Image (tube, rainbow, N blue to C red; front, side, top):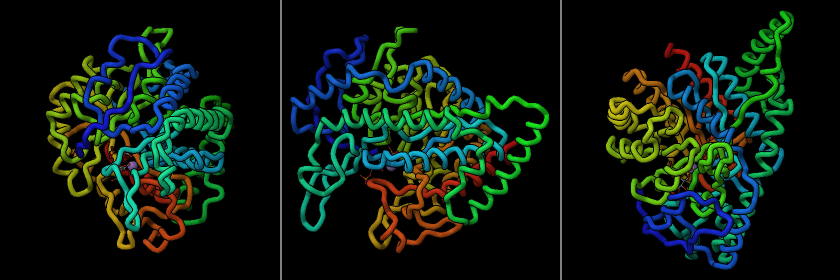
Length: 461
Ligand SMILES: O=C[C@H](O)[C@H](O)COP(=O)(O)O
Ligand SMILES: C=C(OP(=O)(O)O)C(=O)O
Ligand SMILES: [Mn+2]
């Protein structure tokens, strides 16, 4: 875990923010990866505005999700969590959002059908606008500027104006999340996600091995659906899907301003998303992020990289899930393909022995980032697959449940990760590398991954 020195934000409780004992305790703790806003007046007024805006998600939905994740922690469901490394304001278009949702629905169908397990569908969407970085600065051709930290903080263009930390972006992040979530809700509740459209989701994508495989699976599902239809089955349940929104809870002022007291329970919920996770760079046990998230009712994830010890995991459980409530805590392991078989077993063993019921999820992306010879941040599809295989092997060996996967993926035909059945090579990066942060699996690589995981899940039983 990289430690950056804390750059203390100008941070004070905002008028109108929800009152609840302890919600501001994080302000007195060491904090890393926070913006240094350039204008304190804009900062104050942006937070005051955020505090008065409606919640993005409803606490009741958050509770439903906690129940679903509890099922996964018990081995009766599987979590599929995917989306951009960094969403952008510009990228929040109907086409791009629908392609991502479609791809997640397709992956979910592959997994549900192949593994006969309910799949919890969750986007790294509608809020994934802030990035932790390994360096505060970026240098290009001898010019050094602040690193890009996500559209919630600064812009990607390499100019001093754009790279300044502008707090009015917090409000734009909220509105972009709201419109993204609105479209997701429309798609998933308004007919687009109807399982009878299983073929339709594949339209517009070029023919290649994963797509043909998907087509034959869709034909099988179609036949089954027609059969059930002829038998007079009720298809209401197939018309809509549950889809949850998640992001890394990084900029604590934003998360705090969107925290509300639920009128039903009187408890605080961070209403910026259903599920929030703490990143590998901000999971310090005595730090601000862990403290703040310990105080909200949402289900929480924590990324665990290769330096994580079993003791770290146990202390995180004590702090974030003292009641040992299934569904409350998810460990998202991102060890790297070369490490997972050695580093994961002691963590899983000790956590299991402690009696805690956490959900184990694999993020096979973040431990496998490399630079291509032509200078792009990339990942080899083979390494990503190898980490997934390692994750399944370890859990099989220990008799624990491999409960989900966390992917950086997109519905578009980009070229950012190397390899796959219709292989991407580094020359393709020149035209089709679009990510502003980490490389994502493209539509086809994502489907291919879903087939692989469905096979591994099916083999378990
Ligand atoms: O997802 C994010 C990246 O892994 C993280 O922002 C670090 O990236 P960097 O090493 O390019 O800063
Ligand atoms: C920064 C990320 O991951 P990690 O905290 O695991 O490095 C991320 O998920 O984009
Ligand atoms: Mn990333």
